[in-house]
Each structure stands twice: as C-alpha cells, then as structure tokens.
Amino acid sequence: MMGLSKVNPAPRTSLTPNAKSSTSTINYAIWMSIGMFGKINTIEPRIMKTPEMSYNPAVSIRTTLGVGDGSRRNVQFPYFWPNYPNLMGRMARKAPEEGLPTRKMVGNRFYPMHPDPKRNGRTGMTRFVLVPGAWLGAWAWKKVVPLLEERGNEAHAVTLTGLGERVHLASKDVGIETAIQDVLSVIKYNDLDDFVLVGHSFAGKVVAAVADHVPEKVKMILYLDAFRPEKNVRTPQGSFDPNEFGSLKPGEWTIPLTEEILDNIGKDVQGADREWMLSMATPWPMKHSSQPVTLSNNFDSVRSAYIFCTGGGDPVDEILKGKWGKLDGPYKVIESGHWPMVTKPDELVEDMLALAGK
Image (cartoon, rainbow, N blue to C red):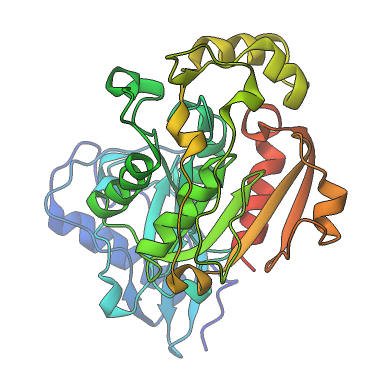
C-alpha cells in the first residue's frame, strides 16, 4: 500500500490565475493527487464545469481519498488550490445511495461527512434541529450555530410562530399544535433526516411530539434543561400553570420575560448578554404553557439524551437520582442558569456533540 506520509508537492505553475478552463482544473486536481499519493481509486469531491480560477495561499482542503488497497484516508492539501472560494461551492455532493462520503465547506476547509449515521460522530457530521424555549427565537442560538458549523456539523435553528422574527404572527390561537407544525415544516422543507432534535425548556414537549410524528427521521431527542415527557404514557403530559411566571391579568394571553424571571433561573445572564436577551425576547403565547401533548408508541422508540443546568430552577440532584422519573439516556450537567446557549455556548456545544456521538 502506498504510504500517505511521503508527500511530493506538485508544481504550482500548472494553472495561471483567473484562468477559466474546467479541463485544466480537473487535470490539476488529479495530477496533484496522483503525484502525492500514487495509485488512487477515487478523487472526491468532483469538480464541476468551468469554475473561475483564482489562487489563495491560505487554502487548506481536508478531504478523503480512496487509496490503492480500497481503504480511505483523511488527508489535507496545504497547497494553492484553484477558485477559492468559488470552486469550493461547486464541489458536487455525492448521493447517499452511492455510499460515499459527502463534504461540508466551513471557512477555508472541507470537513468529511458520511451518509451512514453510525459514522456521524465527533469525527463526522451531525445534523441538529434547534428548538428554543419560551420568549426565544432562532436568535437565541446565535453563539451556538457557528460553533457547531466550525466543527463540520449542520444546524437548523427554529423560530416558533409568534416569537422572535415571527412575532407579527402572534395571536390567541397560537398554541402547542402550531409549534409542533412549525418544526415539522422546517424538517419537511429542508429535507432533513437523521438529526438530533434539541428542545430547550418548554420545547421539550414540542420536540417529543415532533418525534412522535416522524420517529424515522429523528436520530435522538436532546432535552436541554427541558420538560421531559415520560415514555409509555398515553395520557396528556406537559400542561403548565402560566401563573408560575407571574400573575396574569384577565384577558392576557402572553407572558413577558422579566428581570425577576432572569434573576430566578438565569442569574448568570449579566451585562451585555442580559441587555441583549431582554431586548430580543418576545412575549410567550400562554397556550404554549397550558396545552399538553399526547404521545403514541412512536415516541417510545426514539432515543433520548439530556443536558441539565444547575441554576435553571430544577432540582438536578434529585432528577439524576431518579426521583423525578427515569432517565433513559446519557446526560451532561452544566454549571449555568437556564440559558447556557447564551452564557456558556462553548461548553454547551461540547456536551451536545459528546451526547450526539453516543
């Protein structure tokens, strides 16, 4: 087998800047790869038609090559590469049925992905659907999404109807069924499957109901300091008293985020983060709180994992001892308030990836 440790750099003069020759591009990639690694079965990803040619000395491409014995190795090209970043965007993505790895471009690197979910761990791509809790929109994941993508993963942050940038759609009729449909629509119209479905806070019941609808698409439910519906229960679950967040006046149908709530379950949200949250938070439709979900046996088959926050208001020690129901999956504990995506995004992402890989 040809060793991968001996690399003979290919000359960098085979193409001129700004040339527009697809043939030259293909020849350059193949010639450089063969020159470095000898016998090669496949070169991935494929190069598309007539990309513009340019050079950038900072380009570093991490990809996978099939070598002579049929095995696959991760390698990195620390050389000039044509058409940065335009050529990167034109790299074809192999169809899953071909059984070959696909690629995700992040920054100036390609990260390998694989259609086989068993290989989508810390060394591959994991797809996340992020459902925020009360008062929040997709904006709440602003610090988390880039950290996931930098590690070669894919993230879809959801905004539920009536919240965030969809606050103009708020009405008395917006309830838990609307929230469930919001997430199902993101899944459908982004053609998503084999994803980790993350539910924060009250959205634990939303993601549970979503998984009940499409269990074949959900790799795992990850409850982030969230309500956790019990399995093997066919009666309604997850009806909360809206007045636990403060007394509501007659006729009110939304619950505002207040300084008092932050002080109770998010003491670590301070300074600029606190100002940001209070400026972005939108009143929470009361029916999200009061309406329960009823789950079928579809839900029972979906794997679960948990992240608990010590300052989020729940008795974490008692939960871990099983006093609040059985945990049927792995868990992590973060020393934070109820919003670790704001106060501890790095630790949160590390825990999400660790649990997703189990």
